[in-house]
Image 1: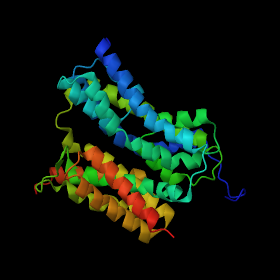
Image 2: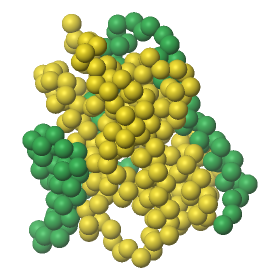
Image 3: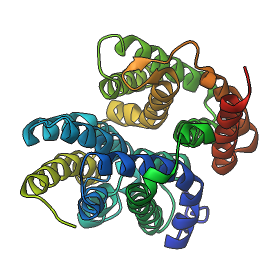
Image 4: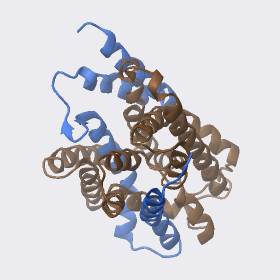
Length: 233
Length: 108
């Protein structure tokens, strides 16, 4: 990238770019907190889970399995598979952070989620200065929001009846729709992107016949990315 | 306010198996020169993952296909339209939530 063209980012900009995603993870985190409390976890345990596991679908599944009395080993194995898609996401943004030290890359990856990945993929082109600081701003904000949402859900969950009525559960799908749209609009390769989208949707629908949702997501994503790569000259 | 021993083992186990796939590619790939076809593949991963997550969120409920009586799928259309027209993630999320709430409230 041209040196004069290089955009300089900051921690504060990363915080600002996280704001549109807050509602989505606030509602999901709240729901996770409700279920974790129902599964018998203490407030401290819920805080620790949100701090160290920090993964939406995995925390739902963990709470469900704890409630069902599943052994620790089977919970750990399930979470491993549910969270394996991070391998793809971490690899996909790695080239954008090639200039930074392994320690910085470790810290960036430790807080990587679907949403922070989506925001980073739609924003970073790889030529920005201080992309690491921007990513820390994005990550720390998202993580703090997640912990707060889980604790709020655990504390207040019993008071809110029928949250489906408020449409808040759709904040997460809406965020994914928005992030996918931003990536397409940023890349401006509409024909190939439409093909990738078609393969991801078709691949998911096909894989979901046999596989659990989280595995179908991964299978569809790998298929669609391969199709995108082989159709490129 | 307590942490049980069993919970602690579960916490350590799930955190470690999540931490490794999150960090390992970032640490390794940033130090390697990858072949062209891997880079091409990685370039398409963001859209592929996001689209697959959208498909899961819109088409399924738990571990089943969404029921045909559930009109929630209709919220997808205005949400996508707002995303493409405004390029604003915040407006997209607000549109999705408002449309879903309307679909739940309207006597359809």
